Image 1 (cartoon, helix red, strand yellow):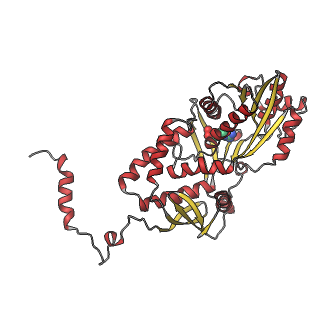
Image 2 (cartoon, rainbow, N blue to C red):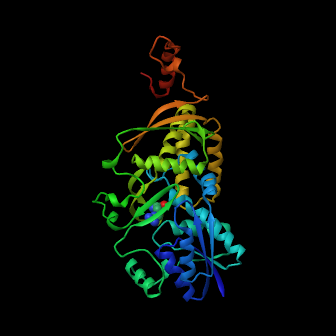
Image 3 (cartoon, helix red, strand yellow):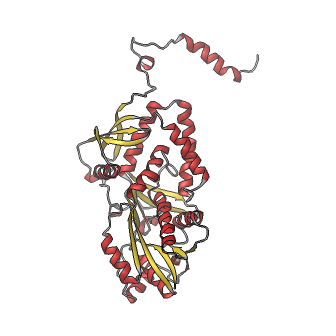
Length: 391
Ligand code: ARG
């Protein structure tokens, strides 16, 4: 019997995929990646076995997700089309990496995923698997099977006693990990409608925002967050706490129409409180310590870096080369940023760094001013000289 390792979430698509693959003669091994989606993994494992998987792997990848994927993106300030903090996009190459690893361990011929043929995630899984082992076959049951709608899938699941906990009414498609939540489908497909409150999961709606502000202080070392409110904290704990407090204050909601790699536009909403807070703090610190040219150049790098992540090219030479540039830019990005979280906003409330380029004696309008204003005249003449034609 040919073996396939399937990236399994316990949701409708991957549950139907287990059975569908099995019916086509595959020995199905399920791989559940724990990226902090906060599910009941024992239950998902049982579900996979009850649906026909011969074996289940569960791996807690949160630490690796943070160190190797999330931290580099914070350092890069990577953001897709100005709005999306890339939580889903970042998780895919990591899941694919372990799909390939388990396939090798199990001597499987093939890896599979439950993505549709219209999204970015299929690209991210398959491009990554192809880079890491070009010899592996890849199956995408959802692209091939006969079901035309979610309803038909639910009927199939019920007919085959596949345990699922979706109803035909619940229509959002949700992808969640510790870095953020992506929510699409249902009423969200109508661009003329604002997202209903029930679509959001971890962020409070404006009517429920606290009337008190909350301050958080984040200390970075070379671009990596190390302390919260002056105390060292494990990265996973930091992200968890910031998701909680940020969610409470309604931080990190995004409603966007994005350009997918496969050529269509789609409307999706996102929740990423911790990511929003850490990005804001990191950028603020960079504004204090990086010089103008590096800051501006890094913005271009950041744009390209985000595209590469979105496009499924994590394991590409350009992404790796840009990471080297970004790492070098972070040498002096050490210091503390205090932020005020209040009614959906997250604004700077204090900045401190031993590497600051900010010099009060040069910036001040007070009498301690050390800026020699007479020098400005010559500077401006020479600066503008190339643009003046002769009389
Ligand atoms: N549009 C996002 C991306 O391409 C998220 C995709 C998954 N979204 C979902 N709701 N299942 O990265």
